[in-house]
Image (cartoon, rainbow, N blue to C red; front, side):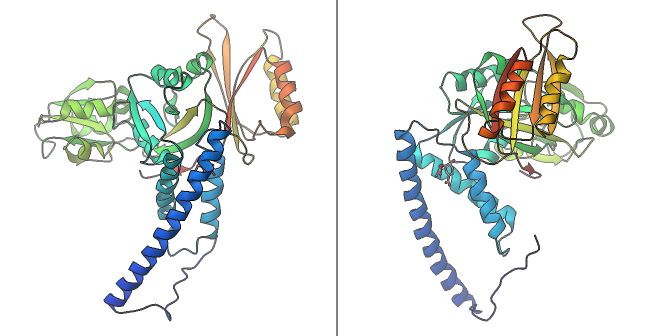
Length: 372
Ligand SMILES: C=C(O[C@@H]1C=C(C(=O)O)C=C[C@H]1O)C(=O)O
């Protein structure tokens, strides 16, 4: 969209005191409006609780945000508007009912930062020791939402998730794509004298060329997460960790170098899981898991149903089924809202052609966030 800033220079005060008076007056207006919005949201919360509906409504949030971005005159850049609204929406959910979101911890992992980007800081985040405990907490209603890494643009799928979807009845609510950029953090002040580099194996792998050219003598130690690596490096000036740059502030470390990844165009897709399928919304995205009968043309017939329905398949991946050797499970992303009534016949046809079919969720297509 082509927009120009709408600064009305004529009616703007110009002296510092006058400008500040005008800002104070504007803040009072914003305060009244934010309080009005909060009252409305509390009211929405009472309606939802009476109807046993989930607090988090990702399709509605997308509508709210896209509506505002479309009408934004542009003095406030769109990314600032989104950041402000991330927190307004987060507060509004909390006013309805505090939301607990679990993630693969400890605090400071990329899953943690993805969760904060998606759900804002009025959410109660709680780390879990494994992906399985994230799924179990959501399925067992010990948490409202879970944040899970699904795939990385360089390293591919985090395959274990697909198995966990088979074992736990959770639904995908939302997704977000986060650029993964690594930094070197440590208690020292430079690279000289560094003996040990701590990180998760994937982070070490994605920074291998940088590490071997800048720290060729250092000993590499794999740990369970980038955040655990920062904890190891804390207080030891001859050690560094590879991870999110904000780990420096979180663990009182120095930012020693970065970005240090070998391929800068590195993205991870995170999903939010919950106990209910998100309702309503636009024709966005649906993820399905299916198995096929053991006969010729089985996969083609499923693909033909999708092709006849004009559905664009964005991803198809097969994984071995853990319960039966040489049997495979397929994960697909479809560019449509399969929960919409218009797809009822098509879904019935899919069920006919699959051995088993699970719709993991229809949810709004996520944004790519470059810097978080
Ligand atoms: C207010 C609502 O609840 C939540 C908060 C929203 C908001 O503040 O606009 C939008 C969607 C929900 O995640 C709602 O469902 O409308």
